[in-house]
Length: 159
Picture 1 (cartoon, one colour):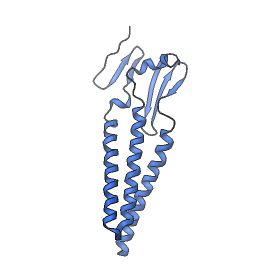
Picture 2 (cartoon, helix red, strand yellow):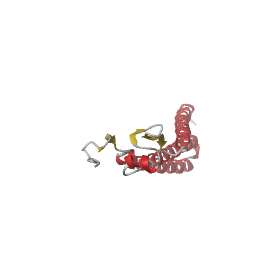
Picture 3 (tube, rainbow, N blue to C red):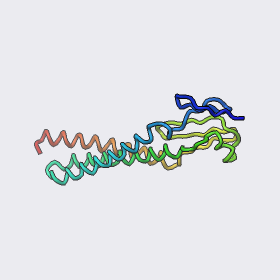
Picture 4 (cartoon, rainbow, N blue to C red):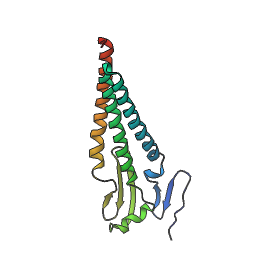
């Protein structure tokens, strides 16, 4: 008989001992969706501001690109977190022919949800998430820095 009680700190207990609840049960996923929507909205608003003020358009455009890339990166990260959504994580190993459940380990960045079984380790996050996420984050940081430098240069030169 399996003991599947739940404690107040979101740790599930199975016949193997405590198992941390997957990322979907934490407030990170809904928060990331809100942040992605906010970043994409701010990107669109910044792009519209650049159209109104053509004289200072370069910092606005670069800022818009940075916010848009950040919004996409957050959405990709949220998708990666959502793929770890399984109600009974300890029953996934036998269902996938990988033996008995041993542990579930997850990482926030790079996104990882490793299901350790006696036969093998199964990665629950799709293979394309991290190779897409890292360049998006790097490009967002670079575009943000470029926007900051363009704004500083424009203020100094008086353009």
